[in-house]
Image (cartoon, rainbow, N blue to C red; front, side, top):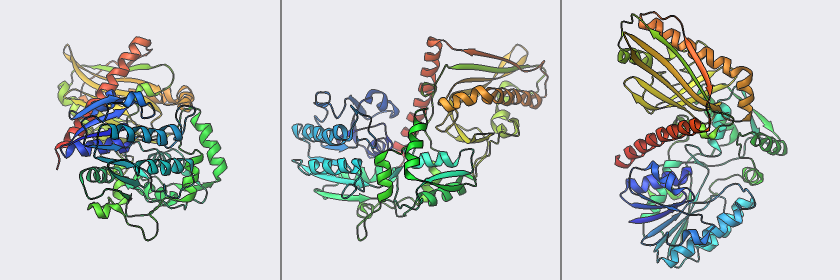
Length: 499
């Protein structure tokens, strides 16, 4: 079946497209950056660049499609162009009209669990959009998921990064006991794909959520166990929380606490008493919350150089080793399998339970850094004599680190290359104060330890630092983006063939 999916960059859209492809369907992906978004799947996705709020840009998008899965929407406004009215309401009306024009038989709309009676502007917009969908000429189904958590979600992932931070005190909004019922992103993806396929769910609305009801306080306790961080919750009045979130967002750290988010938090977000969980109807067993959170702990998105602030820096640290008893390949293998041993004592590469400190392709490494807490990097590309790590969201830097061993005459060079920008303004200040010196010490120590492990000698650790010009910076940004994209393609290809 050919299916039009709107919105492919968020956690819901990515999960749904992957699940549809896994089931053998073809996807037409409609998004503002669809040509880039579609690259993360090796095949089966046709990109259509368009904006649901712009009628002209979406005309023809649904041609030849048997079903439409309308995911695109916003949870926070950015006036004057990006508003709930323009995107969630009018955008839905535009997609419904396009679907009717193209003769689409099935229309599946992703709403929200609180849409029926929520009083936030977001829920009001979803409720109005549902009324539009109910007038669709063909068969429609409305899906109302609870808080969706998965790689890069805007709420639970943010809480996880706060727990991993340097302070043992984590803020909660109000009492921290407001209840909500989250759903793991892959469970929702399976649900949406099943709804698209089934013919017996026409003109129905399904509430979709996990089995467990949680709260901020409960999540903090669970995340504390998962990360090994002993954190305590501190209540923050809602007004102060909103002002603080706005102030922090001005320097580049996004915390989702606008007026609508606060209103939704106060109202709670659970399946109403006596209601039915649509996952039961669809034959889907929800992922236990602790299991989902453990997976989430390893799945944060990359934080690439293009996402940072300030000038892009290049730093190199190396030693030319004479008399080593190892070839470049065997020395590099020792580095890869003893990464935790060669880092300074204040950098713990086994910072969280279940982490091994061994570099394997696709693995996430969690490090404990002084004055920063737990941060993560992903092994994005691994070759016999080199490896590239990309920083993940929550790291103070946006960039890449590459380690390599190579033959130099009769000797072996071990080298560390760093390409990075501070992740935001706060980290920009911190890097100037102490971060650069800490980084110099860390990577020089790693090189020194590799000289020791090699059994050879070197005159010392050499290093250089440079600020890249615009062309050089653009080339590094493209290099990192390509590495990240190849990793996503490999991951999605593996998911598409797994049954």
